[in-house]
Length: 625
Figure 1 (cartoon, rainbow, N blue to C red):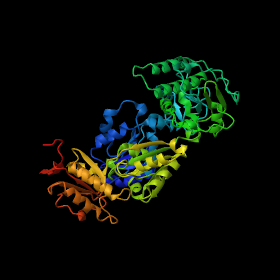
Figure 2 (spheres, rainbow, N blue to C red):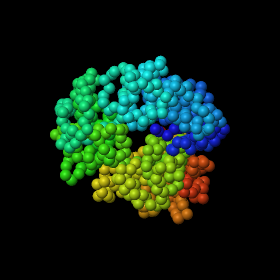
Figure 3 (cartoon, one colour):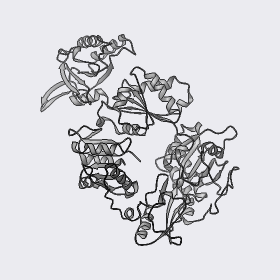
Figure 4 (tube, rainbow, N blue to C red):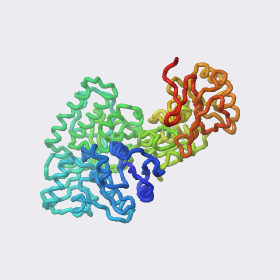
């Protein structure tokens, strides 16, 4: 489950919030801006709660239940997809689960209540009667049909008994009314549900399908032989009902080819990857249907490690809503069955498929953790934290950090990226070790890990994105090339400073680094002259340091050759961080002693203006006289 957002309104709730935070690794405390310092600041409660809810983030709100209900009420629609939402008293004296019964809200309520040493205010009838939510099976298991599940629980509450068929250890301690001769049954099975109304069917994710074929015509997707078995373990432990002919399965098999045809003939003319992905997904579904297995029982899609960069495979896994895993073919075979044997680390009771069709499936008796199947494609995400405050970090960067196994970056920036989970590996380094850091990131990602490279501001503006790409460009390592590489933008220091000042970058502008660590000073001088002569607004990064004390004065001398003394200059120091300051001076007034390494210097153009109406503002008009 995603880490919860713990939302507070004032300082009085902070201690309780921190106590709850200690229970959930990776969780953050969200506080109303200006009232209390926390991990994330927000400006308006209702909008913030709705945004969290829409993103599926579990919410623990330390305020009145009525406030939370009114805030998220406009978004309430489908009970099956809502995240857990709880209201907790500011002093921790009450824990009230509000929404997300099918997403584990009552489990969270009990966990939080235990941490606060109080009793949770659970009102769900089934939970109170049976001691568990029958409709919320553990990870690795899923309901065949939520609508039928609600009817089933209603029948139990009305006095019916049930029997349990299959492995359901999480129900061992539940106070269910049981009878071996009961009309109702809870069935835990990978077999497709036949729509019987007296059964609550729960599917363990216990099937892995290996795919070795490439892009084929959509019509080929229906050619799976339902009786085909591989040459290995074909008859091993085959269940007598391995091919039940039910209404649901017949309908699913009939629809398999129709789905592929519909995908291949849309007016939008999907690209080759989309067509291939639809074909892969349709063939996998056809194989499952042929063996009477539910699509919801699929735990993972497996492919050869040589196909890690195949976009169609990744899209097919997304269509099927399962992880994509990879394994190396053994030296003595390249069939889908041999791929399954290479990847699976637990016993599987049956193995079905057809090497000629390029698909095979393995069925285990219990739910399978996809993390034990082969390996994932490694991922390296280069993110920008923004200028420093959590609210100016883009959500995609926060998501990447939450999902990372390893986090690399300059020590100061890694600390700014927190809070981090205890199980995440942190690799902090000195600020000058960019290429070593980039190579280390690729080594980790090529092992199948999810790696985040942290920059401040925007990673593509004088930051780590270029170093990462340079390392990849220079490498002959094919494993590095297979890493899923992406860049997440951030709010750069220039943009953050400009926003505080108004709009000094409102017309043409350029960004220049005054550091000559990686480029000769004569190149910097040349670019300064051209930018100043072109009347561009200029944003200076790395303007001065103890090791480079003279460059800023030299740069200003060059600029003053082309700009008037009254030219507006914005100085933003630590913008977005505690203690940040903003000043506006003229070019004639500016002295290098006004600036340090943590200052963004924005030199206006000839049209940049400053005025005061309520507050002081600086802007560059979008026109020239």
